[in-house]
Length: 414
Picture 1 (cartoon, rainbow, N blue to C red):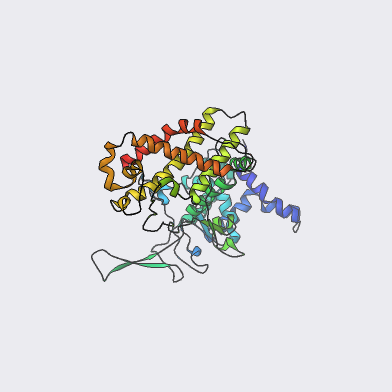
Picture 2 (cartoon, rainbow, N blue to C red):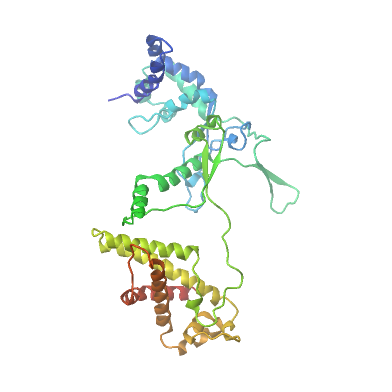
């Protein structure tokens, strides 16, 4: 059975051996467990294990170390207790090798720090020290989790005055701190989404217009925030691991349409204008159809669900535009200059909803029209483009039931 602690020290001594600034015998002596462990124990007090470092707010902020471990609750909130995020370390950057040692995972899956907390025989055996030395080291290393009595904030930390309910004179003064563990986990998930081998393979397939079973997801308008300048290690260990970068998701408000929707005078479908979302969906449909046509290995079980998912989103886009008209003033389609077909009038104008029973098969006819509109827009999107796959009347018959189902669901929710 290997000793992970010996392996850790063996790796760390390779750099000084390569630099050859000291005699080999001296380096070998420094990296013996008894010698290096004693040095690390003396330096452990220079570090603090934290969940919310203060230096993300300002490099000169000096606050009481905050080590928070929340409990999981199925409440749907993004918070420390509900995310499996690791902890961070702040303090003297020159002593970060101590934290690296405490993070070494032993054969049972627990790290060295957890073994010190448990006062385990296994760790004592691996360190090969006597009881007194082990007890001294244990006390020293566990200082990394020590929390000072009384919370102390700093003028350089962002602060918020939070009024107390039903009392206009009293307030809480909150110091807003960065949850660096959450930030690190958040960054890692985005990195996996963008740069994992599976995502790279899916992007390559898209560029080559080939089918890919899973596709990929992306996040637009991600902002990079920098901490620590040329010395990210002075902020925290996780910040150093990430090169001083954190990624922020866009939280801009949505771009809403004008308050009054465009009112179609003679034909709802002729008045529909493509926007960024609908163009994206039409292009996704074109790429999928081309990829499916070029790859004979694609099974119907893999291809059809993806095709139908894009079609459903296109149908929903049309239904959303229709909903804007349905929520507008009743009777708008009876104004002077308007001449909508009766089937569209009972669908779009709430002033005529009561007449729906008088129009035969109005939902089937609307579903036909929506499906035909999608097919026509697809034809326009692939026109004079190569390669492409053209759809026609046969596809209208195949897709109409899917559209009819989406229409019924939309009407049931209205």
